[in-house]
Amino acid sequence: MPYQQRSAERLHLGSSRRMWRWEDDIVDGLPSDGSLVVDRRVHARDPYTRQIFASGIVTILRLERHDGRANRYVVRDAEPHEAARVLCAEATWLEPDPR
Image (cartoon, rainbow, N blue to C red):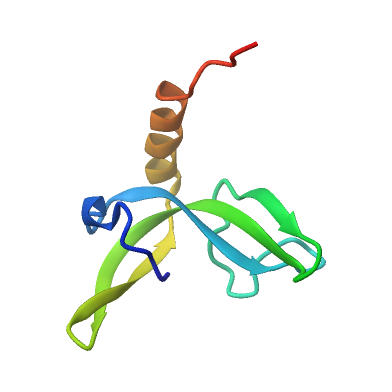
């Protein structure tokens, strides 16, 4: 999973977290590579490119470096106990509804 520099220094190998990505929108709603399916959420749809902005909970396995620069994390879908920790943290830090 490629990443941008923002907040990348806080990603620790073996940790679980929610990750986001743009991907092709397909009929059955599951990604073609079969990943990013644990607590999968679609946040936005682009009708022109037929892509969706989706998130899911993953566990970071390793960092791949190319040309001396880190530019890709290898991840897998989180196990139930790993996802539970992320969901609990999200619920703890959920901002209250301003209404």
